[in-house]
Length: 115
Image (cartoon, rainbow, N blue to C red):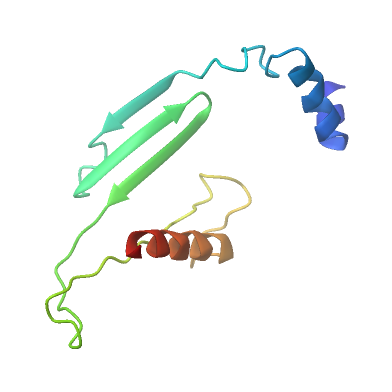
């Protein structure tokens, strides 16, 4: 019943917990989930990390390759971020070329790096 209430009336569902200063999993609002960090977990990457925060797992791998700089800026390098959201992330993602959400995230990362 609680799951249906959360899906149908999410605002009211979460307000019920906020009124009691607890989260739905009964943690206090200031409590955080256990965090586990594993660095260097992808041996074929130049850098990598796996982070677990409660029931959420995120993995990041960094690949690097040498490339010729642009002719108009021969002294500047460049970074091309690429976000991949595989079906392991969520059943909403499909194998194949990057979807719109992955493309938007990649562009947002590129914009942040350029600043």
